[in-house]
Length: 208
Image 1 (tube, helix red, strand yellow):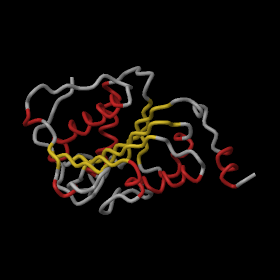
Image 2 (cartoon, helix red, strand yellow):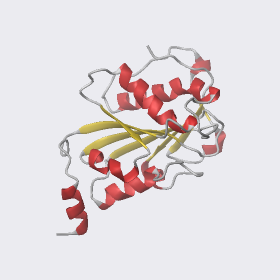
Image 3 (cartoon, helix red, strand yellow):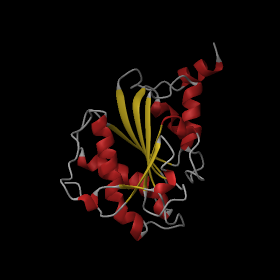
């Protein structure tokens, strides 16, 4: 038996083999904006009580400890604080092969998302669809509160996550109406990156 097969067998998860959609919140809630991904995951989960189509997992900064929970996942949506040198509060979408080489310094956690995906790939368990929705932190210093700019932008991250799930037909999409001021605007710094989109928060949108 190959080593990867032995590892996979040792990490058998009850849900594997199913058509699973998982929202994974990453980050530390005691490092200011680093906890934005977990905060967004918690808010999104609260808006979808009892939703059988979507699973939620607060991953914190656990790294490889998360592997057993990701086996059998088909669609993985990761919410995290991601440092790509954009303006603080910007919401970043990364998908495809760019996930394996995030711009900038990427996640501030002990083990970054690319490492986790590489481990899943080695096990033959990388989800067919993976999207990272990140938010540019203003600070990751010790503290239990988000910075004001990231706190204002958090509803935009939650909305982006909701609409990503809608694209996967897991929830009903959000419609904003015709208020162009509340529509995310592309940031020119990433205009040439095919799979990386950056949105700036012009107006915090409350999802009801």
